[in-house]
Length: 213
Image (cartoon, rainbow, N blue to C red; front, side, top):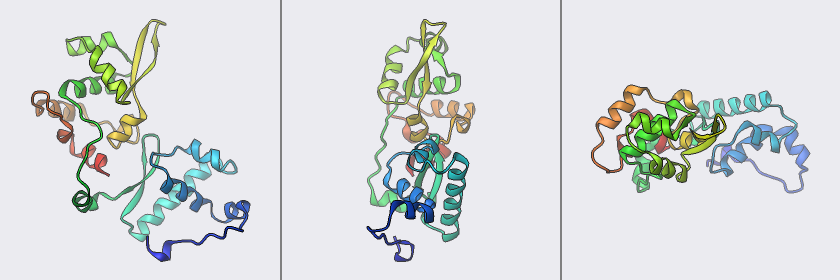
C-alpha cells in the first residue's frame, strides 16, 4: 500500500487514545486482517463504545474514502457482513496472477437442489424431492457437507427444514437472499449444463463476477 495511506503506530500509545482518535481505522484494520465477512455485531464486540448505527456510519465513510481515492479495492456488504474486495475492473490481471480455482464445484443436480432450497427455504427433504421428482437425500447431504445448506429447524416438530447459509451467500457474492438471481437466470443456467460436469463456469454473469473477487 502507498506510504501516504500508511499510519504509524506508537506501541506506547494507550488503546483508549487510539480508540478516541481512529475508530474508522480500527474497523479498517479488522477488515484487512479478516479472511471472512465481518458482521456489525462482531465489530461491536471489539468496539462496544459504538452502537450499530455509529459502526455503519464509520463503514460508510470508509467505503466513500476508497471511492474518492480510487483504490483498486472496495468495501462491500456480503453474506450479512462487510468485506474488502478487489474491484471488478482488475479481475483480468488478478486472473493472470493466480490460477483460477473455484472453491466449490457443483453438478447440475446439486445446483438444481441448491436453487430449490434458496428460493423455497426453509424446505423439507420431501418437498425438495417432490419438486425435483427424484430422491434428493444424497444431494442435500452433500450441500450440507459443503457448508452451503444447513438444518434450520423442524416442520411441525418432525421433518427437518433446510436453508442456505452465509457461506452460500459469500460463495456467490450475495449481500443477502434478496440479491438472488431471477428464476429465469436459474433456468438458463440449468439448460446450459451438460451431464455431470461441474457447472460453476455457467453461473449467471452477475454471480460469477462477485465469486471471482
